Length: 294
Image (cartoon, rainbow, N blue to C red; front, side):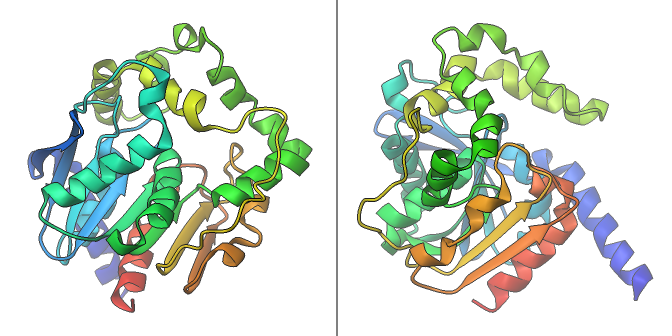
């Protein structure tokens, strides 16, 4: 049994390694902004949304694992890689990021999808589910607590405030001058992976990347969100790598208060912020199992 499992893991790893040659590239028009996506497989639609700093390739392992049953579509968010890079902070407001996802779904001739998001993609995914419940079949979130949980921790948890200093730095007018494609790709030690990410980041717009923070990240003085709750109407699966120092696990508390359907929380003690890469096989298998019973 162990040999069989190892064989399956290696098979998926090999598939993922060459996935960029297997995917079909496409573009959706989001009110004049071109959004690139990579598609693999057929069946019910899964739309995968990356975070900062990343691009569609973040989901290579999950695409390889799930494409036997689903059409896996991983997007480049605006500002990144092969998608358009409109100028101006106002063009990165959350409503436009959500609109990009809706545009991709519609361009594929679908009326709904399983929405998957990590980091900023997770924030987009949460918001998409609240704004477009009829288009959200199921919701899968990776290392991005519900926006209300994050707002609460920023308002009351000094450690989260301290660990969010990077976001406040990114909100400064001159922040882009201190960030380089080479620096962003530096976390990848594998030469092939480093080269892929460096190429994608060189094609991206650093200012646009940071506009996500300038347009949408909470600013001091931090306050809780006390507006009426719009509950997520879809079932939710959430992963959280507990070694994430940017987004602390305390923000996960009370997530169930903001959801209308069942909630499955999977914490991964040995994974960090990029849980879909740090524990890729576990995440992929868990996603597949959860989707099969929903």
